[in-house]
Length: 182
Image 1 (cartoon, rainbow, N blue to C red):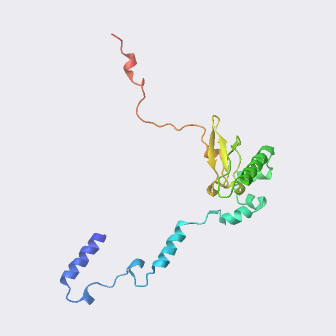
Image 2 (image 1 turned 90 degrees about the vertical axis):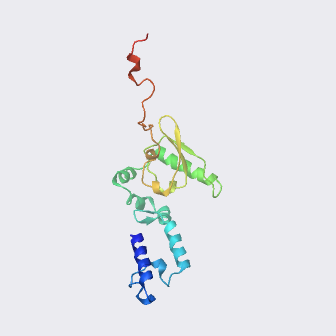
Image 3 (image 1 turned 45 degrees about the vertical axis):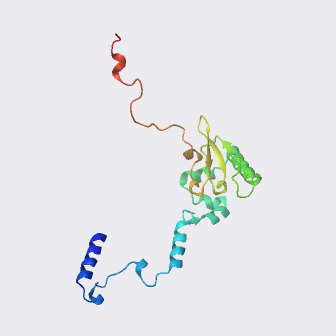
């Protein structure tokens, strides 16, 4: 498309006797117009790169300040039912240990990893920034809680199995073992 436009322009330049008849009035993109402002373009690009995180229409800052009841109204029904029945001793203990690890770490540093077997714990905004070791059944997977993880279960971020990689046959998979030895 662009090549045909360029070749058409070159053809018109070769045949044109004055510049007024050179090009028909076309709509040029924003970058080619006279009122193009480099500072405004840089500002636009900066706005695009650092997108504000929102969870179901609520920004991260207000999500962190939100009460548990308000957060319950945002999550899906299964999580809402779990919160309505109340968090038991173990999930509350995990949240307390995460608070303690965050309080003990220095500013702008990651807190110490808190290990847990609670794969069915729903990630709440208070956990953002914490390091959690999630048990898979064999070992702990270290995971940093990010804002995008809010509302998900801890177990979703630590796979309990190794996905199969279907590739070439392994040793002993051929029919050679059925051949008689001479």
